[in-house]
Length: 342
Image 1 (spheres, helix red, strand yellow):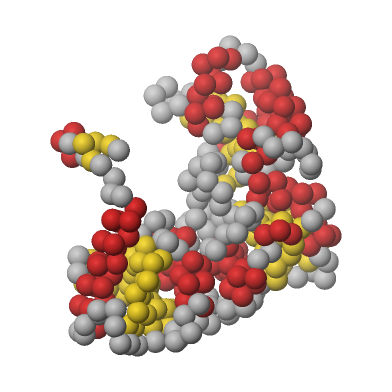
Image 2: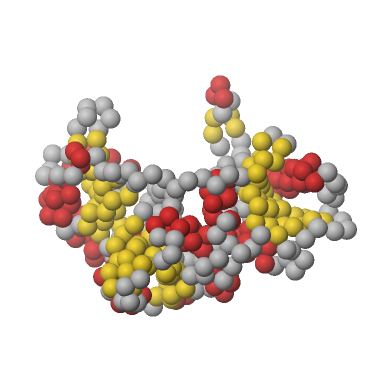
């Protein structure tokens, strides 16, 4: 529940009610686009789709993406695989159509992307990859502080952070009010703010070193369940493989930026490493934990961004090497290899 325009209380729709409205919306958009009726009978079938709404009409699966549309391609492809009469996939979205169009081009499955503007469907246009952003030169001296405290400097979209076994524990910032450059210690924005309030007068290296020791203890293999080893589990997997690249057939690996900037530390999102195989070929590795239906679209997008002709491996815990992930991987124009990490 929240407040909308002019402070009016906005009550979120019941999930079932929202799903029903999305189905009506999808039916109206497809009907208007095709110029024929969509009524759930005959050649048309409409059923529930968890990230929005979906229907099959004339051999085409139409999917309206609602929740996090930029991460909906994999789920839509998985849903399509269960429709025996489906030959093509058409995605409709009101956001992220450029990212979806870019990713759709990397699969053998015929996929079209449509941007909904009111009742009109406009063909999606592939969005270019984000430009490389250099770290603020004023932040560079903080790299040494990160290393002195026992953390590892990591750069991503112009941000210099310090990680411990894949978990971010500090970040270089410039105070927007005072212009002060400093290293803020903590896991996530709220933790950094609280840490600054409680330990602001303590030397940064000393404070960070204590955090590093605590985090290390909880990010050991086989450690008891704890928030510090549940956060960024995919980045722990990346850290492990960088420490032992031969397990992936690699001579060297290093962290690399994802094709979309990470929004926060809480939500699990795949991460990326790049390097070289033992045979000297370029390699891109993408890491994930849990059953992430969008892992394959994310991964082929990451390869296209960093090195289009590189070998691509998807690294997941053994329990998460699901048949659906392997099936989606085979639909890529250049299929990746799935590696089960045990």
